[in-house]
Length: 198
Image (cartoon, rainbow, N blue to C red):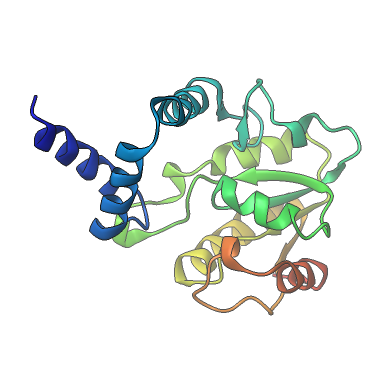
């Protein structure tokens, strides 16, 4: 295979990454070409290791290296609270605030009719199973404050309320149309503390 073809394959693969346009892909590719072989090998090994060792927690669907994630296995967490998020990266954003000490449940996305994603494509059944088998007193819905996040929150609230479990939503303070992972810790912390029942 020619050097041009090898470089083009690398550029194509880098260009598939979110947030990486053609110029960024080119910068990264040329950096890797100029890096010593050991640096490139470390990056390759790190990618391979994370793909081999990290999977979804069997309880909450966060990232884990064992059967359950470190949060689910932590006995000091408040076992009566579940914070429902769309993606595992949202957990990191909430954890950085230091304002929440309960458990989590990752839906694996949000309801989006345009993308043909309904409740059956998300981890809603697993959430309801947890609510039936664990001693949960409150579910905090922390989906993004956009149309899909609000649709998901409304659906979950309607589904959970008959179970006689308190359901709340993150309070205002988060920009509508924004993503949790980009919110600063102070804004996100205040939103958790001032959550409202829905």
